[in-house]
Length: 174
Image 1 (cartoon, rainbow, N blue to C red):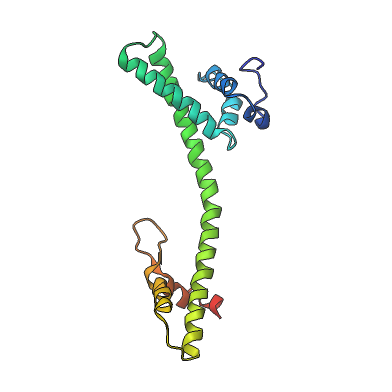
Image 2: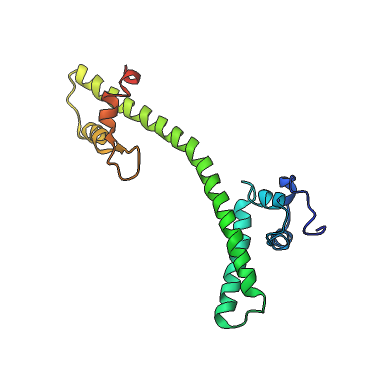
């Protein structure tokens, strides 16, 4: 690899293609607070953040073990502090990325749950309209509408799918 500090931080594809050794060299050559901010923005990019995290964690574990068993060098404690600082930075980027991925997935899952609940409720309504005696599997399926709940926030017991189908989702069922 060219000088570990010189790759173009805007070329994420190039950085992603680095060998493990070259990538680790890039990370460690730029671990100090004086490293160019653009390098760390690149290392925290969605394409690289997990790899950056892995490299930093591996070295942090290695240093922790060396500090514990007394084999650490004179600069290892300071390097461990730098790694911890960079790990916090990378952890924040990972959380932001996870949130970015979670939101659309959550919306999609909510739409699928809605369609499923409406479909189950329509099946129940059709059976009632035709005066069909429900079979045990029908009752099991319909019971899920009451058993499954959607919580708007953590700790909230939420509202049953049946209540949602009868209320806010009623226009979809028609």
